[in-house]
Structure formats: C-alpha cells, structure tokens
Amino acid sequence: MQTKNFQRYFQFLLIVLAAGSIYPLIFLRSGYQETILLVFGLSPEQLNNIYSALGFAFMAGYFPSGWLADRFSTKKLLFISLLICGLAGLWFAQIPSHSIVIIIFIIWGTFSVFTFWAAHLRIVKLLTREGEEGRFFGILDGGRGVVEAGLATIAMYIFASVSNNAEMGTTMALQGVIYLYSFFMIGISVLVLLFVQDGSKSAEDGNTDKEKTSINEVLRIFISDLRKLMVNKYVWLMGFIICMSYAVYWTIFYVGGFLQTNISVDAIRVAQVMVVSLWMRPVGGVLGGFLADKFNKNIVLAIALAFASASLVALAIVPVVAPQFFFEAMIICFSLMIFIVRGIYWALLGDCKIPTPVLGLAIGFISFLAYLPDILTPISSTVLLNIFGETTGQNAFFIFSAVLGAVGIILTFIFDKALKCEKSQQERLS
Image 1: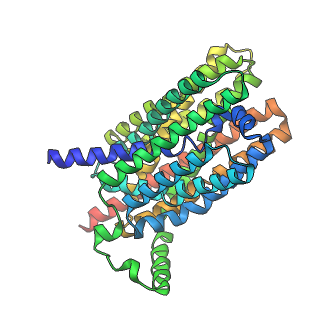
Image 2: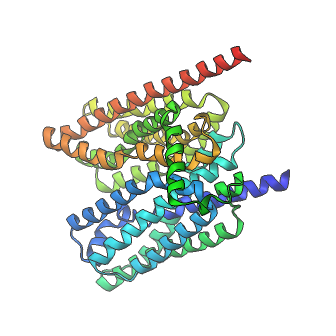
Image 3: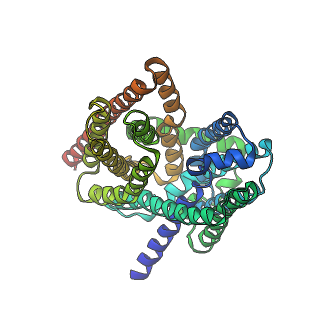
C-alpha cells in the first residue's frame, strides 16, 4: 500500500511540475514585455495580435482536448505537449521573424491546450480517491504557483546576471530565460514518459479497439457521449461556476494598474505588492484544497468567492484618500481568496456524476464554458474604460466583476442543493 501511495504521489508531483512549467514561457510578456518588444522588434499592437492568435488557439483546443484525452494515452499526450512546447521554445530563442513568432505561439496554444489541458486534469482525477478531490486539485493549482514562482525567480537571476545596457546583452539575457523554460519542459517531458502510468481510456476500460473503428463509428460514439453530457445538469453548472469565478480571477491582472493609476502608488511598491499576491497562489491553492476536503467544498468555494468579490467592491467604492495600506491589504486579501477558489473549483468534478469513459470529453466541454473570460473579459474592460474613463472605468470593472462573482455564488448554492436533493432521493429509495 505504501509503495502504491508513493507511486501515486510521485506521479502527481510530475503532473504538478508539468502544469507549472508549460505556461510561463507562453506568458513571458507578463514580466518581460518591453524586452520582448525590443529584442524581437515588435510593436505593442503586433504583440497583442500574437496573443489574440494564442487565445483563439486556446479556445479551439479546450473542447476537443477532452475527446482526445478519452481516446489516447494521457501519458503520451502530456509527453508530446511538453516536448513540442519545449522545442518550440528553443525555436523562439533563435529570435525569429514576426511571422514565425505567430506560428510558434499557435503551436504553443495548440499543444498546451488541445493535447495537454484535459489530459492533465483527467489523470489527476484518476489519481484521486474518494474524499481527496479538493486536496489534490488544490495542491495542483498551488503547486503550479510554486513551480511558476520558483522558475520566475531563477529566470530573473539569469536575466539580471547576463543583461547589460547593450542591445546584444539584453538579447542574450532574454535567450537565457527562454532556454531555461524550454529545457525544463523537455526534461519534465522525459520524466512523465518514464514514470507516469498510462491514463488512457483504452488502458483503463479495456476499449483497446476504439482507435481502430471507422470515422463514422467514431462520430457516432462522439455524438452519443456528447448527448450524455448535455443532459447532465452538473456539467453545465460546474462550467458556469468556473466561468464566473474565472472572470473574477481575471481582475488580478488589473489591480496593479489600479494601484498606480487610481491610488498613485509608485511602480516599485506596486511590483512589491504584486509579488506578495503571486505567492498567495500556493498558499490559497493548498489551503483551499484541504478546507474543501474537511468541509463542504461548495460552501468553502462560495465563501471564498464572496470575500474576493467583497474585496473588489471595497477597492471600487472606498475613497482614494483612505490609507494606501488599506488598498494593498484588500488586493492581497482578494488574491488569497481567489486562489482558494481556483484551488477548489475543479474539485467539483467528482460530484458531476461523469462516467470515466467520457471524463476527458466532460473536462473539455466544461473548460470551453469556463474559460470564455479569456476572450470576453478584456472586451468588457475596454468597453467600461471607454464609457467611464480610465479611473472610474477601473472601479466600474471591479464592480462588474463582483456582480459576476455573486452569480457564481448563486450557481454554487444551486449545485450544492441539487447534490443534496439527489442524495436524499437515493436514500429514500434504498
């Protein structure tokens, strides 16, 4: 039993390392935007267009990623994802032209979602036992935060050590950062291939002939599986709960600008506050996971989402003459609460009554609904800023996000009540 537990936890550790390493390179602009613009000779508009292409690649991949995870070896899917993203990173490090950079980002968008997203969530779900979902998914998100923060710290050291005022020095420093992330991904891909057990549907359920069926048969099976999901109310509820929660999470990308624009906090202090907020991810993820397993996960999620939404309302309505510390504390509180939410919401998967053969497809469908804010939230923010102006628009955006959080809380209570009603009916029948 101890040996099996060790193998299970070691596999889980590798999934955490994989999830924490595959996305930082894709979102390198968060810490190196000006350097990327300089080294690659891009304009801000060109960089935004590149990330728009990435966003569409993401959205195109979420739903079919679930179908892929159900039909093929999840271990091999993770290996291929990490390996190709790492190799694309080595290509990116050669400082190619603008058109090639777009191709690289589309490759990243495809292999970090289509072949990776549902596969890694599916294998985590299969590694859990009853009553462990909250803990495992909380540690998954918190562990990702630790990996990302650790890699970012090493990357910053490399960049600072190599960089100087000359353009060539800046180029070499950025290349060093890209190489770090790329080689780390490639290394993790090898470990995944060697040590993660196959989580494919065929391996688990004995459906070894599934890949040999005709295209028409595959389509028929896909439609049949999809119908099963369409009538599952928990799948819809979970998708929209995560969607509302993720929309609230998106405001974390705006709170630093709020401090600088609305509260007139200097850039260095803003950076310090945001570093503290970043470290709330492992704290919130792990804490949320353990609270979810100890108490009712739906209630814990609702309470954390309520505090996060209340923090946004406080930021929006409290006069700017209030002490600066108040706004900083609200942002850190918001960060902790929303990372607790992120650490819990995928744990709802265990309550959705999803058969294992369609688990990956369900993850893909839920993800398609859940991550719509990746496209819609920036649009809504732009609209509000255009209507109300930069300062008031920030406040309006925070209140709008808090309202979405309230919708998420209501949906969470509906989800919880539906579960209790179904359990009560089953007890009466038994």
